[in-house]
Length: 356
Image 1 (tube, rainbow, N blue to C red):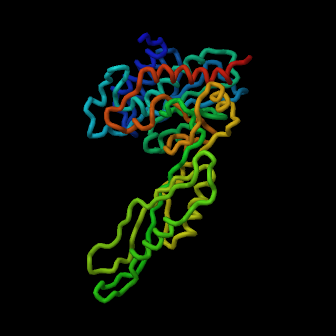
Image 2 (image 1 turned 30 degrees about the horizontal axis):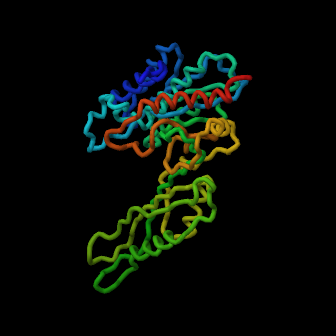
Image 3 (image 1 turned 90 degrees about the vertical axis):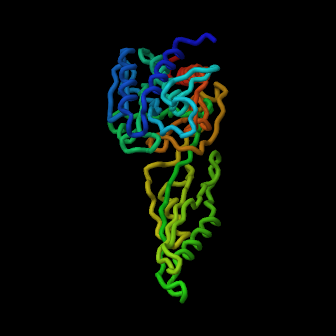
């Protein structure tokens, strides 16, 4: 198969990223590799922690801007890998390696797309490229640390493996730590007030609770109790019992509304671990979505979390690869998917960037 020059360049950077361990929070090497790649292409880049960013050559503060954002950190490799996760390996049209699919391929495709438009003088929008860190753990030194340092932007394309379908909405995540309180006592005499029973009542109430607002794309808010811990010895009635709720909000609710509704349902204390991440959506008549419609791209609502949850503007999540391969052993990307990713990103932006 003859491979385009842009695809070859993208694969070259992707192979370097695979061979450079970049666990979330430890991305110094991959950030440096991206800086060197951009420098070789004569692009002036900037760095905030391990986030690397750049703007197009003819950036103008008078124009609106589009952020092109994807991440270069990875999870740690699964124990069931049969190939070296840090050794890029091509076989049967696939490139194997940790981070090849999530989100190395979307990132390198966005880099090549940015370079395609970098020197253009007739753009209707500016482009801001952001190769960010700590996405896998929503770390404070990732995109959140970068946002105050870059020019403002009006919308974003977030590169994640979606099979180049358009994620026009994305669920968020709130993890809630709950504690039911009772009174300790001797189990033989049925003394005290059993906190496990109090927690059980609240858990049943959560199981039966339905959030009324339904997203046209994402459906209902999902909520599950995933951990329960109570009691320390068999002959003592416990005075506390803790449990954890995994909540997946849609764009129909703010995080504050979600927490208020949970607290109205249960008597236990409920404390969210993190309220920084928010569900997101983009209007279906937004120019990016309209351009994707014209290209015949499919739309869907995404149940998985990304840096969309931390962005202050509307965004479209789209990229080469498949979400089902993310965090899996022997992760890979199809080389044809990289080529298609660059082609579609470029065509998508051409429909709104170039003055007619």
